[in-house]
Image 1 (cartoon, rainbow, N blue to C red):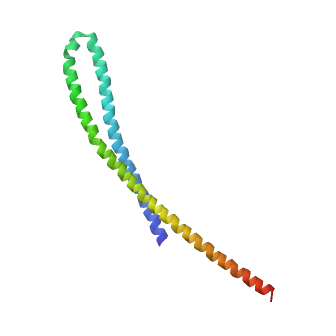
Image 2: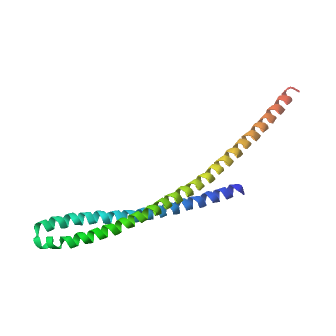
Image 3: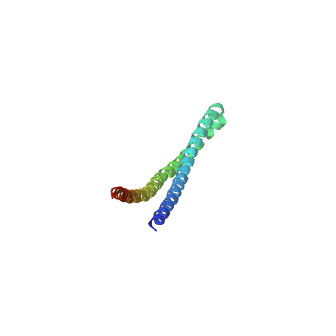
Amino acid sequence: MARDTLDTLIRLAEAEVDAARLALQKVLAEEDAIRAKLRDLAVQVEYETSMAAKDTALAQQYGVFIDHVKRKRHVLNVQLDAMKPKVEAARDALGEAFGNQKKYEIAKQNRDEAIAADRNRKDGLAMDELGLNAFRRNHE
């Protein structure tokens, strides 16, 4: 019964670890998407700056563009800052799930080692008994 219970607990803990891992991947993907938007914005600013330097009509609109970029960058940075606690929470959840899994695995290993040690002790006693009986028969 105990063997089945620990095996079941280990399987459940593995499922929790997998779920926590997926949750962390999802949060990290969201964070990466925000960072990618910030990089794309920087590339766009670089491109628009070079175009405004070449064309005076575009240069007149450049100030409006930069204001828009500043607002968008601010929004993205706020979103990025909001992701930090989510990432930490997901990492903590993964660490806790992994810790629980390890506890069950260690308990199972300890139990298996205790069973093996008991079996070896009983086998040794049985072998001693056989040897003692053989000795008695040979010396009677």
